[in-house]
Image 1 (cartoon, rainbow, N blue to C red):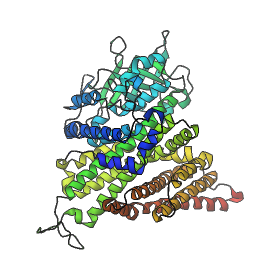
Image 2: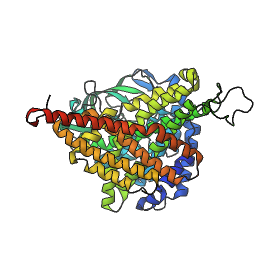
Image 3: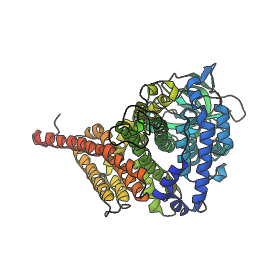
Image 4: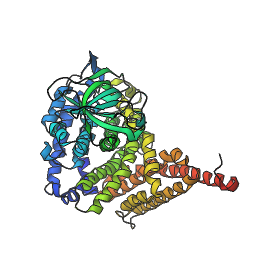
Length: 582
C-alpha cells in the first residue's frame, strides 16, 4: 500500500485548531490567501504526492543509486518525478514571487514536505535543502550571487547541498579544515574533503550548488574562524568545476538518496556573507532544515501508521477479549484491530502524529509571523517560539518516527519483518533522522544549556505562558495542561539553580528535559484538538489513549530531572564549605 496524503486531517488542524487562515490573512503578503486557496493547494499537493511520488518509493529503495566513474545514476522514475515536481512549481511554493516563487505561507510548504517525506523519503532528500539554501543565499549572498543562483534554487531548477561534515569533524564544526584562498578576481579556491553529503552528486538537475563551510588563510582556530563559500558543480561559463564525488555510502536506509564523499581540488567558489561568519550564515539554513526534519519524522510515522492501520483492519487472528465486536460477523477470528494490544499501538501513534502536527504547524505559522508581522513585538515572540521549539520538535518527532514505526511493524508480526508490506523500509529510512541536522542529543543540549539556562528559564517561561494563555481553566483538560506547563516552568528554574553547583548536570538531564517539554506541548495540542472536535468519537478515543499511554511519561521525565537536581543539592550541602564535591 502506497502512502496517501489525507488533506482533511491537515485542514482540521490548520483551520479548526490553529485558526491558520485568519492568522495568515492578518499578514500583508497573505491578505488574499484564504481558506479556499489553502484547501486547493492541499488537494493538488496531496494528489501529486499520492499519484507521482509515492508509487516509486519501493523501487527506489530496492534499486538504489548507482555510482560509476564519479557519476551517480538515480533509481528508475526519480528524474521524471523530480522534473514533475519542478514543473508543478512545488519547490517554489513559499519563495518570493520576485525570485520565481509563489509567495505562499511557510506552513503550506511544511505540509508539502511532510507528505513528500512520508511518500518517498529517498526522493525528498533531493529538494529537502532547497528552502534552507534559498533562505541562506537570500539573507547573506551578494547581489551578484543572488542574481546568478537565487531563482534557480528557489524553483528547484538547480539543487543545493550543505557541505559541513568532515571525517575528523562530525558535530564539532570547529574542527573543519577545508581551506579557501581568495583570488584577485574576488573568487575563492576551495580545497578539502566533506563526507555524508546528501545529493553531492546526482543526475536530477544539470547543476548542483554546494554551500561549503571552510577557512580563509590566517583564520583563527575554532568555529569563529569559519566562512561559507558557494561552490557550483558547473561554473557560470558552463565548464565543470573541480568538485568530485569519490564514492557514495552503502546505508541502512535511504537507498534512493546518494550520500556522497566529496573532494574539492582548488574549486572555484565565492564567499557567502562575511569572512569568519560562516556559521551564522549556515545556521539560517540549518534551523530551517531542522524544522523540516521534524516534519519528516511526522510524515514517516504517519506512513507507518497508515500501513499498520490498514493491515489491522483486514487481518484476523484469534478472538478479541471483551464484548463481541460488531466486525466479527460470522468469522471464526476477530480483526487484530479489535485486540487491545494492537489498538493501543495504533491509537498511541495516531496521538503522536496529530499532537506533533499541531505543534509543528504552529511553528511554521510562527515563521511567517516572524518574517511578515507589522508588530515588532509579535515578530520577537514568534522568533522566540521558533528558537525554543525547533530543537524540541526535531528531537522528539524523529525519535518517535523510528520507535513508533517499529511499533507499527509489530502490528504485522512476522509479515512486517519481510519486504512485502513495505513497513520495514520506513523503519530503516527513519533511523537517520535522529542523527542528521544535529543529533538529537545535540538538540537537547541546545535547548537546555544554550537557550533555557542562560536567562534562568525566563525565555522558555514566556513560551509556555503563551500556550497557557490559549487555554480555558474552566475545562478540566485545559486546567491539567496549565498545571503541567507551570511544573515545567518551575523545572527550568530548578535546573538553573542546580547547574551553579554542578555545571555538568544540565548535559546529563537535557534529553529528559526536552522530552518533558514535548509532552507538555503535546498535552496542550490535544486539549486544543478536543476543544475543536466536540462529539468526534475517534478523536475522543485517541485523546484518551494519549492521556493513558503517552502523557504519563511526563511525570517520569520530570521525576528524573528533579531527582538529579536534589542529588546535586545534597552533595553540595554535604561538601566542606559548600563546595562542589567530586
